[in-house]
Length: 447
Image (cartoon, helix red, strand yellow):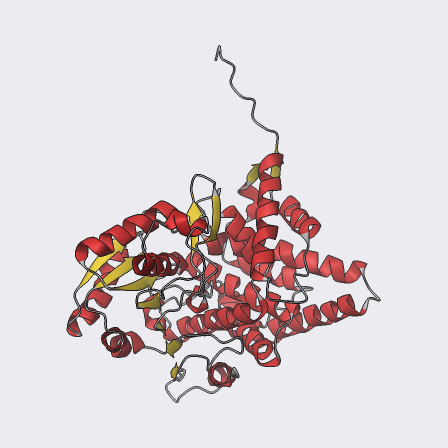
């Protein structure tokens, strides 16, 4: 299958940024794509995109999926409860009662998956809906799979369940934050708190009934979280383009790059963002979707792998970590290209980096000397936290490098080419980004 559906939507959206209606308000992008229409790698579930699509489709999809009672997994921030009342209302309108389940941490954990499954059983839920960021989607996928097959989440992590699993119970993904592209994933990343490592619950794809992307749901997302998400989506689109994927996915990645850059064109001049702008939210949501499609085709990049490895030892949000490391990741790509000049592969890499930089400049109006320069400028313009506050001991850095490499190998398993950045490169990125500290002395028995 080809990516023309999303590609056309992205292209149309980009055109509408330049040619708006007489009122100055950009036209809205809407589409409803059946399974395998968006992704050349066979994305297996339906995607509904557009403003107000949540009200139009969530109830209908739930009913069509045979769901009688829904467990709604939501974030744990102060505004999550009131936001989730909206989806609760939509489900009640469709005649489907629901019960809200709140994440206990800012990420899904092995123990919390078991707690979520127990809650679903107790309230009689036979369907799950994620309403929030990527962590709610990981949790919803995990609960849906374990609910269908039984046993504890730990049994899946250890591989005790094997590959002969029943399909997950019906579940629906409704992102309220744009950024990681998690809405296009079929894996559930969970944190093993004992091992301090974030890993996939199972290698078996966990297939949702649908993802409903309604940009209106992200209107209340604060500035830093919005920019972190945008840069994370941008970084994945760039890395997918550098890594290489099929032609259609490559074009989607490039369109995602242009969407994010053009979304920042006015804010970079004014130093502020109209967070209530539906057009701005739509651009970010489309770019996030593009990054997810691109990641499915190419595998996730180094920034994602480093952020996942950090997830085992830090409570910082995934997109904050990923976006903070992005300039250092692209510094490394540039260094490799320059140091290996004359090699066809790395000369091609250099040309791709220059092409990305040209597109960032053309779409945003800011000309950086490199991709990393452009990213640093955006981060500084909006006072985003950087990596300078990260102080890590040598032993911890070694563990982070190993886990990041392991994550890269996992997501690149189906690629013949593999990753561009190797273990030494990941180590160089982390070394350049964080502060190395001396190990703390262990207290003596007398202390």
